[in-house]
Length: 184
Ligand SMILES: C[S@@+](CC[C@H](N)C(=O)[O-])C[C@H]1O[C@@H](n2cnc3c(N)ncnc32)[C@H](O)[C@@H]1O
Image 1 (tube, protein in one colour):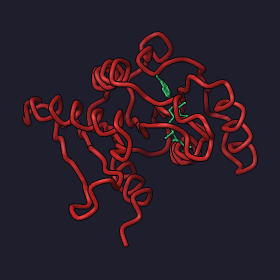
Image 2 (image 1 turned 60 degrees about the horizontal axis):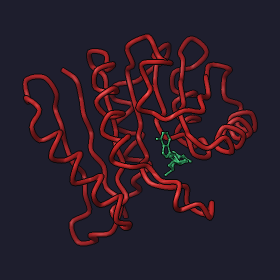
Image 3 (image 1 turned 120 degrees about the vertical axis):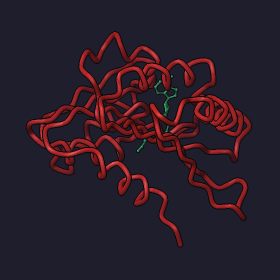
């Protein structure tokens, strides 16, 4: 069976390496932050955003427990404010939209009003040969609508500027899927 997380990492690794700058736009418990931190190493930098202070606490613990290099900045703010915090071009960005599973706080979820400007900010900051991965959870209403909104937006971008793809299991409509944006 397809492991979506492995696929995410495979695609990110085609673009991201030692010394690069990466952003985790939805830190949660830090699974993606740890992957990015280890990939860019001591000489790179990872910025991670979440609006829940608890996410920063659990991510810091996760990074420390798993031997991440001290190359990360954890930011308690909405991801659409990227430009206020990150001044350099980014080589990779990961969005894992939705709410934190098992947190009991399903109401704290990403929302179209801030997701769209966050994706726009990420695209504006993307370095040449950069990559953006946006994971969608269509099993809840806001997640399904986020997916539709982002697909409409990415479909309208010139293929001469960005290569925009969608990866979806076609016989499981509620299963997560993702968009990949690669800069030429
Ligand atoms: C599906 S979880 C992310 C899981 C995470 N990548 C991990 O590995 O644990 C989505 C996260 O997005 C956060 N979030 C919701 N709205 C946000 C916003 N406007 N800016 C940044 N993070 C947000 C939620 O608090 C939640 O922790």
